[in-house]
Image (cartoon, rainbow, N blue to C red; front, top):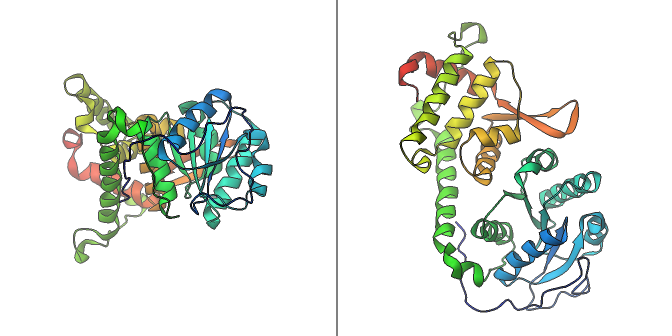
Length: 324
């Protein structure tokens, strides 16, 4: 787990005024030998928020550019530790092309990248990013934003400083985010190894031999889970992986398709948390992503066949009244 060192004091570089101003020459790699961050934003308001986050970490900003000019600027940037893309509106084709380029560049190890967006942009952004190494955060608070940048830059030996973000009470939030990522890692480790070697193999029943299960049965379980929040704080029952499994199972039984944005809502946790689980479960082969053949800016998620079979057998063995 990455450790962020909190250091009091102002950020070491000046704030830039114009949206597309360039603070350094792309060939200038000085500043204590640390490559800078290239910052891209969809509006002046988005730019201001991104500047606040990056300045709080003490990392140098190489340039601030608008989305339409970003690809050309990336081509001219010889070295950068990361690209930060802040989106508060849909920029159409230029945004799609930029996201696809970021996805390719991060996969090739050229730089790290963080994409911060509003919940309304989940589907078009995920359609381009896939499940690669780009850090994607949705409607994130200050602590989540700094944590995302720390994760993105950690592989490039870029220690971060925190100034105002750390001083406004978000240190505890950073600890919670660290715990959350650790929990995901531990859960996936159990999925891949199992409790013992003897239990690693799971028999997958042929489709014709699967126990009967109705969509209404699964929906009743989902309703029962949501009912708990009327009587107890919602955070007591956060279990996004299971909630997403249930949602995808009832959709499969109802012959419905589930876009990423809908699945994030079903997870009943903050969108960024849901996306972390979704990404991890796709990588482990529990979920499958499928492009929408009628809309290139949307992807659907479904259960992998083995996961679907396992869920059906689970319901048959546990009984409806026990499955909450």
